[in-house]
Length: 298
Image (tube, rainbow, N blue to C red; front, side, top):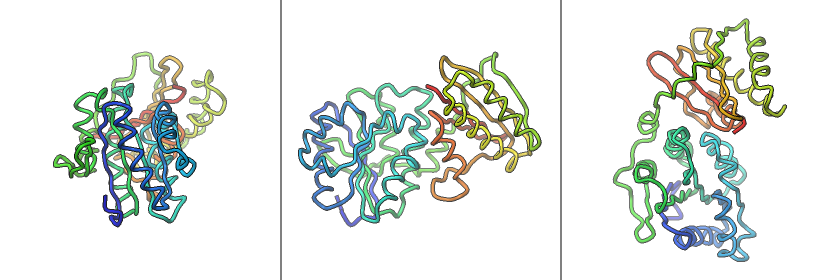
């Protein structure tokens, strides 16, 4: 690996714990020896074995359970990766595992968009991100998409430039797919600039079974989405609310072009905040408008 390269985004395909440790421990250890800040954000079950393999070097590594911190794929770039890289002026090194067996079909498009947008969000940065993929358990289409979102792929034997790498915005658009239809039982409300206060009350009343801080987060997220609709669409929109088990689902639809897929500019702050507040955020934009659906309480 060229330590002078400005930024590298690499996929590591592993088939068992030994292969995972062989691929990640050397990468992390090399960063520690170079004096680089190192973050490891992987499944909790993998942290203990990796700590043991690293020995005393583990004390110089920051570990995060990705299944908790990254349960919303849209939270990983601003809330995990950028939060860490912004804490240092040095060249950084990160291990991030955004895809694991058990991710749902609903989450998957957001996972692919996340991996694609890493290449845009960190372009020109001084660092390297290694993304492990459990090739022994994940479906073939997941590994195929990993080859499209990572300029470099390492299968444990060879580290090569990916011939399938795809321009990030184009791949993100491929996964700009329609959302499953709301249930027939969903509440539906229209909103406009004069009804935002009432809309907030509707959301708070609907989500009464959640913890108080969750209700506050959901109200803030929906208010941000509704405000964006008013400012950037036709000045009005539609709010739909329903419950999936213990999860509150809120959907805001309008005739606008949606939030820009940015994590670095002020124009993207609203959707970053929504992702930080919610357990999952899914967006679909078409010629007729934008729909953003948020989940909280999962």
